[in-house]
Amino acid sequence: MKRIASAAACLLLFVAVTGCHSAHHVNQWNDVHAAVAVMHGTEGNAKVKGIVRFAELEDGRVYVTANISGLTPNAMHAIHVHQFGDCTAANATSAGGHYNPQAHEHALPNETHHRHAGDLGNLAADAKGNATLNLTVENLTIAGLMNPVIGRAVIIHAGQDKGAAAQPTGDAGGRLACGVIGVANPDAK
Image 1 (tube, one colour):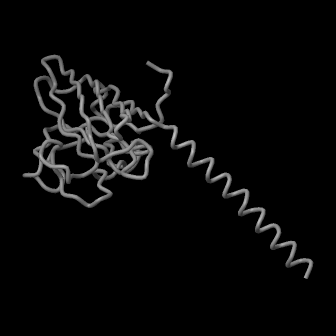
Image 2 (cartoon, rainbow, N blue to C red; image 1 turned 135 degrees about the vertical axis):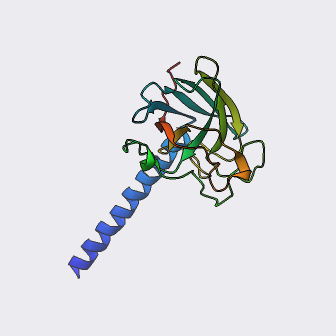
């Protein structure tokens, strides 16, 4: 009987400690309001590089900015959040497909709100191969319960995302660059 009581006491202690630990873990994620992906070129595309940032706005939307260099000059390049934060494959296929937790069809941000969570549209490269993105989205969170991006990857594709007309992924071609989305340092500029 003592052994059962002792085991029950240990179980209660474990539950109490784990519960407190879990609450602490959840609270830590509540304090994450910015994320960053450092983009690295895939095999044969070493010149493609840059930074993609995600910032949570007061109204719950997410502001996405990107500064990318080394792209094909005067061309459009698709940019998407992909399922996995895994850029280990030489061609970045280890990042999986588009991040689509709600099972929507593919579309561009200006086409519909019912699109893959990872559909961020296109980057327009200038004559020097540099591109920027400034986009506010409503279907992502940084580390919240709805479509969190932390731990996933950003992929920049070789071609233009053709939107809803090209299911299921926009027909954007190969993967030029990959970056894992991590917690941003709030003090970094």
